[in-house]
Amino acid sequence: MKNIAFGQYYPARSPLHRLDPRVKIILTILYIVCSFLCKNVWSFALLAISSIMLIILGRVPFKIILGGLRPVLIVLIFTSIINVFWTKGEILLLEWRFIHIYLEGIFSAIFIIVRISSLIIGTGMLLTYTTTPIALTDALEDVLSPLKKVKVPVHDFAMMMTIALRFIPTLVEETDKIMTAQKARGADFSNGNIIDRVKALIPIIIPLFVSAFSRAGDLATAMECRCYQGGEGRTRLHVRHMRFKDFIPLVLIVVFGTGLVLLNIFAPGFTMS
Amino acid sequence: MSRIELIDIEYYHGKDTPYEIHALKNINIAIPEGQITGIIGHTGSGKSTLVQLFNGILKSHSGKVMIDSEDIWQKPKQIKRFRYKVGLVMQYPEYQLFEDTVYKDIAYGPKNMGLSEEEIDNRVREAAAFAGLDAELLERSPFDLSGGQKRRAAIAGIIAMRPDVLVLDEPAAGLDPRGRDSIFNNIREYQKTLNTTVIIVSHSMEDMARLCDSLIVMHDGEIAMTGSCDEVFSKADELVKMGLDIPQITKVMQLLSEKGIDVPKGIYTVEQAVEFLKSLRKSKKEALQ
Ligand SMILES: Nc1ncnc2c1ncn2[C@@H]1O[C@H](COP(=O)(O)OP(=O)(O)O)[C@@H](O)[C@H]1O
Ligand SMILES: [Mg+2]
Image (tube, rainbow over all chains, first blue to last red):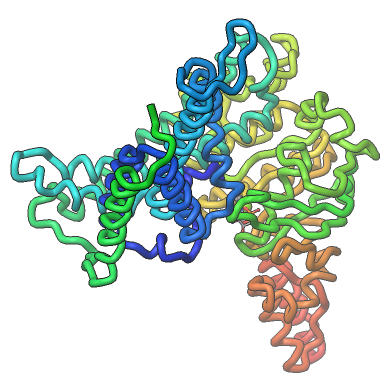
């Protein structure tokens, strides 16, 4: 249970893993924008290629990426069916009673699939698979720090996120331990009717809450002992400095976006309706 | 009494993930009946993983766990039978307490077994006595007990199921020396009275030497040695290589024997050593007279 990949982080050594998380956040936003810039066959093809390149660059196995796509599989299938059957166009491929399938329909189904999968692969490869949740929160605090000027408690939210993230594996492990201990006393979580199953959870939830509250109390005391008093004047142990090579991906994504727009305008081909 | 046998066991934590750990490798052991068997090994050597196979909390990726010559995973639906047969007290078991009184908490296991109220009452009181828990504590909330008392309550919760085999994973971890000694005395007493099979996991040689009839030494997920205390402690060099140690007093005795004093083998406790030194002094005096 400990290995339920929390936050899906996949440990590996790759350029994407090494990239500054702040850059990755900005890249992700721009990549999402880019995926909505695509209009025709050529720009969608480029988008698909870029996703595949991201996967290769991040050294994450295809099996894991496919696993990540599984939750949206139903949505993908459903929207593509709707697109295939309901899009009206000019080139009729098949006609049978009330069913008309046009080439345009097939293409728009493919477009939708490419767009949704690139969105998921892009955010996954740029953020969740290659950045630890803790690094992500730190980076988020930096990226959002301009909001401090308008009195948004960015630091406090980041601290809450960090603590929550820090304790998720601990709580998962603890749940696992408690479940094991109760199983050893004959608890049964998988059989019986709904009421039995809910009742079977009590011996897990109570100890879990007891320990979570005592942990929270301990942590608060420990933080106070070290004079924690919020973000004011607080510095970091690990300060990240932007280096020249951290700017290269930002240039690349602007080139990529421009390329998509140019393809939309100058390359003829099927256009999304 | 029940016999536990492990045949060709392999176990992986987080199989098929980037975090895969080969926790148990080629385990073949048989646990002697009606004795106290100790499982020793340094932290992370796979002791806790091993004992969780005994009652089917974990299922090995290959190999078989046999209890009384019956493969426990033959009928996965009936695994609960073996959970009652082999009572497992987990490491730091106090977190399993959840009821509003200690009595009800100890009764949780027997209740799951579907016993009658009367039978449950008998067992709870008997188990509390074995675990060294005062009867007046039974009506208290488990969360108001001291650390040592919580530990006893958790142990009583398993004993109350009257398992054929009692397995305790580091029962004394985190207790002060007095609490530790008294819990071990209770366990010894329990084993003598009921003549059950008891398995104790620990990394303290001193405790194991005092308590166990035979030992299983684990190292990096493998069985490094098995045998009686004598057999195991005679291989001090190997133990040290595995990050373990022989009892301090045994070391002293070894030094004495290197100095040419005729020291008998198998002295693991200070009491034994005192006994031996006294007899030594006596024989010296007699020789002088
Ligand atoms: N639930 C788990 N998930 C992943 N790895 C685990 C888990 N439990 C134990 N391990 C790993 O398996 C190995 C053996 O651990 P364990 O059986 O707890 O050893 P011991 O009880 O001897 O200290 C260790 O390397 C440990 O990190
Ligand atoms: Mg352990």
